[in-house]
Length: 142
Image (tube, rainbow, N blue to C red; front, top):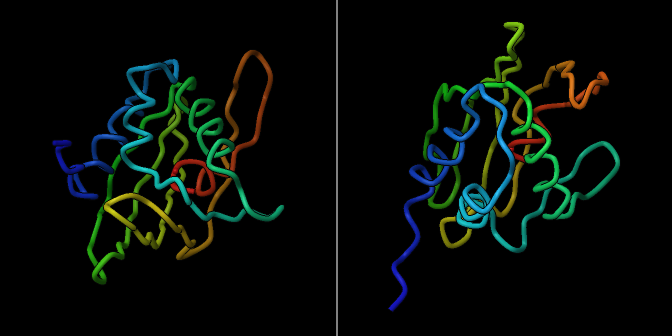
């Protein structure tokens, strides 16, 4: 018998905690948390159209390699399987990006993500070159 997955709120907090301000590899240690949190039929769009689940995972791996720390502001249930989630990323230079999302879950996993308000863009340095990330589309696209 397989144990049921943890409630969404717990899984989200666990996943957000891996972004602790020190660079990490998206390894076998972190991939199971992604699998536990994101539904196989994840639907997310950015400015260029729908994003695949693999693309979301790749973006998370890039962010995890940076020295950015995620801090939960709130997570609120707003419907049977819907949540209002707000958190911030803080760079090692002290810059902040606040991400505010409406998340719909299926089987306790993120299935759909919608922006609640505008998002900021952070400049991160990855592998020696400057790269722009729209964080609200990365973490809870996250």
